[in-house]
Length: 203
Image (cartoon, rainbow, N blue to C red; front, top):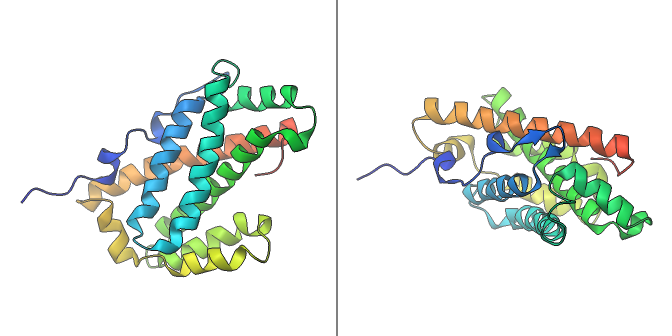
């Protein structure tokens, strides 16, 4: 019986492979890496996470649609934001900027949950992701949405169940997870600065 492939062997794009140049973060590759991130929640094995997956997927679709319509002007996240701002003087009309903002907020939540869990090897995912939620998305959510996310946090699998799903052996998989996560964190941190400097909103 052959071993199951490791998660990082099944994804088509890692954040490690997203080009970052002077012009910014490559939009197409960033979207592809983010689509692959959504698959991690599939490993959680609980329908409560559909709300998280749908939120991320919907916002990725908004960014992809804008890129398709403006392949040159939106080739990097930075160019996309500048073009959306120029094309839509009224901030309320910048739906793609809003989509990217919410996508980055969702990615920040995901990266915080995983980082807290990796840094605390005895802590369960439900605790780590609750802390990640409270340090990221919670302040942007109203009273109607928060309970849905708290329910999802409670539905996190035990770490003893989750990490083996990423693949074996763990000593090979965990360094890949660390590398992937660090690259994601760097992109989120970079874009937080871009949003702040450009007056696009807050991540």
